[in-house]
Length: 148
Image 1 (cartoon, helix red, strand yellow):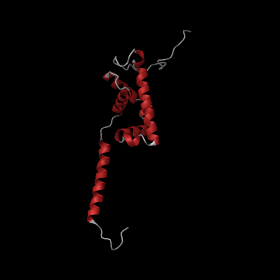
Image 2: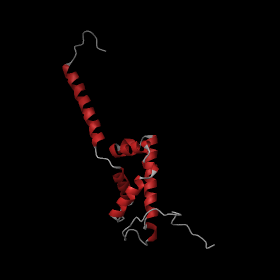
Image 3: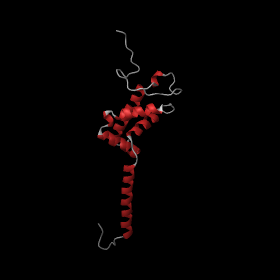
Image 4: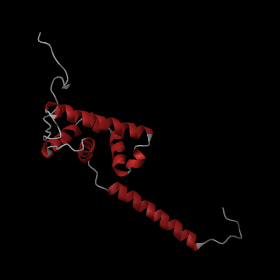
């Protein structure tokens, strides 16, 4: 509220208008940034496996396969991943969005490792890691079965 003897400042109005325009432009920029969940999946695998040579074609196939998983179809999950793309510092600090992002990252890395030859090679840093697909029966590469 202004008192009757306080003059209205045109400079203040221009400043507020400029801030509003800047806010709308910033929100538009965030909304129009290219975002693809497949790119998020690929970036997550690469970020969590530094120094490992990954086959690019099989990594893309993995991302396309994982996109069909129910977790990546959920609207809340999609919003959390978009927030991680647009505002990573803020999204990971929000309790629910941060939990969703962390669970998705764990699932992505776990699915890639168990469906690839990562655990089947002597030294993963010296060989190219290929994704062959999800295991049809038991996806645990450490399971040992007795002959019945």
